[in-house]
Amino acid sequence: MSTAVSPPAVGRPSPADPLRAWASPTTWLGAAHLLLDVFFGFATAFLVLFGVFWSVVLLPFALLGVPVWMLTAWVSTGLGAIERTRYRLLLGVDIEAQPMPPTQRHPLRYAGALLRDPGVQRRMVHQVLAAPLGALTSGIVYGLLAFGATLLLMPVAVLIAGNESAHLFSISLASGTTRGLLAGVGLVLLLVTPAVVRGLVTADVAVARALLGPVPGALAARVGELERSRARVVDSVEVERRRIERDLHDGTQQSLVSLAMTLGRAKARYRTEPDAIGGLLDDAHRQAKDAVVELRGLIRGLHPPVLSDRGLDAALPALAARCPVPVELTVDVPVRPPLAVESIGYFVVSEALTNVAKHSGAAHASVTVTESDRTLWITISDDGRGGADEAYGTGLRGLADRVSGVDGQLSVDSPAGGPTVLTVELPCRLT
Image 1 (cartoon, one colour):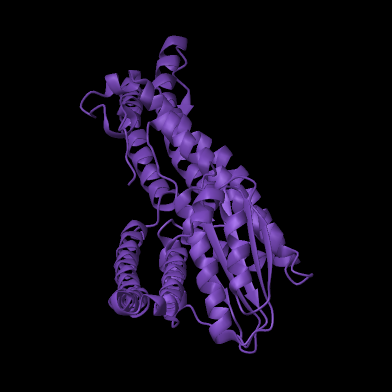
Image 2 (cartoon, helix red, strand yellow):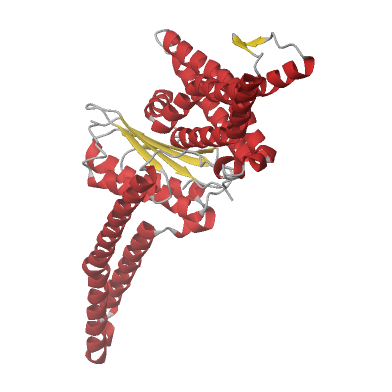
């Protein structure tokens, strides 16, 4: 939420004390700010319009306009940061920045996200309008100063010089009444100038908040999406809990029951036929090993120990080796991410490879895990039939919910006929 430290130039001093308002430095800071709007506005408008123009002109030429547009959006973001700093230093007004869209590896998608982002659009509108609005507001302020000073000082100068034939704006200054009236009007204009400065600065701040600050409703929409995502995560956790319960009941529990029964039979026969229990003990040994294997598989599905001990570099090769579809694996993460990000990344790869094996009909898959700009990038692709849809597939939607839990992004490109490319972006501060 945007907050403001209201300095005297914005909210005080009171118009009832115009002399004190004239002496206040915040009045002059406000006037300087309005004048800077003109010069800074012309510079920002030129840069933004220049970039937008060449983005459009170069777009048909091998999409050369795409990098120009992305550069323009980044320059606009930097200029917006400078503008917010100017508001804070001169006026004491803090304007919270609207976050940029998350970066994407696909240039066209990222350029489209920048083009559709309301924060980018509003910021550029402000940078284009700053010059004409600044020219208008500073023209009013400095016009009042110049006109008021002229009306006040000209009659006084005529009186001192004794030149009663002088005229001001075709008005004869021969009459003392006329000179006094004009001087009075000039004094009034000068006295109300601080109030005009305050009003124009307040309006300028309101425009800046509307165009440079967060998009209205963005926070509420974000909170709503987080609440929905949290509800889906809770549901998925409950589904996972029931799956574990079912696996324990149908798998490990049955193996242990069978083991107990075999040992019971061996115990009963030991008293009467001690030489005949060798086969039963062999069965019990095999059943115990089967139960251990099932437990290991269950634990591995939850969080493999090798992931905690050695990270994704060591855990993902075993995951790829168990996939029935041949997987080409590339992992380039020099420094381990936080454990939560690492765990989500492992689960994403595990679930994605399971989907490849079950649904894609692919003959080959690839997994690439890299880190750049404090972001863990995971790309899973296959040459299957395609047609995967994040909006309707519960598995993909569950992955998206898990990824959003750490403010990550998941995108799916899966045209009918394939190939399918799943890209996951997990922001993290590498430790």
